[in-house]
Length: 440
Image (cartoon, rainbow, N blue to C red; front, side, top):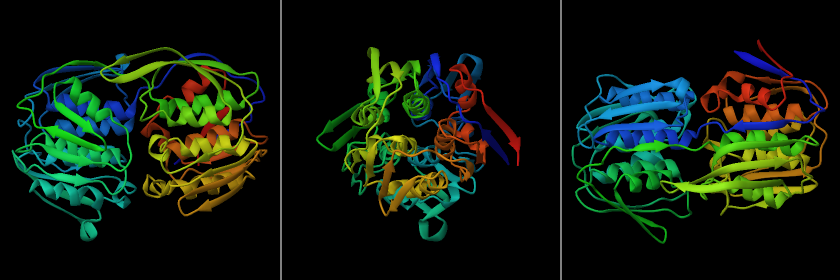
């Protein structure tokens, strides 16, 4: 296990950098490619560990994938919808809940048995929320500890029952799994979500010719006879770019331009929060491709104030709450985050992990059942903090260390490769290289 020693940086960061590739879109684009007949080319693909788990899993179903990492490109060759083959091996999703949950939906429409497992962390994450609704398709699904955790199995069919389901909590992963399952339905399926969650799956499938309509909070999916292969150029990942944005916001006299960032309204809650906090940034050259907005973000250092983040906004900012907590600790006044209990069942309990990390830095933070109460502004102390093997906790604490007053050690740093393998390299590109990775 490795750790990183972060030295404080009393200078500015500046320069132009291309945004890291979008992990959520990469997963889903590869899956759509696997269900499309012919050759799908995807530029701007994220080669993070989670997305590589998805590619390896699709390969076990007979999909041919050509990887060109230096070009950030993959080519997906498939016979298409209804033609995927039963895997001869267990599908290991690694640390990727997205891989496991969404592929479970695809597995309902593959004749035969699919068994899913993952690493120690993923085998502790709740899966009943996916197994129960997938049974509505008429397939057999079951897992460990009364269907609560992986490993679990899906015994799929070439055609499944059409269904209606109302999600008890907003979840883009569960919604996407059900949409993919509905593609093999015997009729139109209906999926209701209580709050809008990220809609990349819907955008990609519509672009590929699938009839998906939203009527209020209900999504209607009409199963296609086939899906045509296409070319996709993916934007950058706002969730990963948020760490660079936070750093430029907090370090005085900083100015950076992040090129080609995804601006999907169901993912851009971080920018809305930053603007309300008084963050100084602007979006340049915004455009739209296959239903996804994208543009450049110009960021300058800012003085921040505390805000309230409530339940309705949480699905749009769920991945960025740890780094928002770091911003809040530097903001004047109180920040209250509520309705975020879903963070307790991520790679780790993120509410607990970021609260403990910030307390060790000297921050006044109260951990609530569904959120955090953070009093700022605070001067960050040094010491040693634990990432708990969670990539977003690790990167958030690194940012805190850079803007702190003393050296900070962040333990278990290799987890950043899960979503942002170029994290430290990109910090160097904008001027920060005061870190040392070492064996613990």
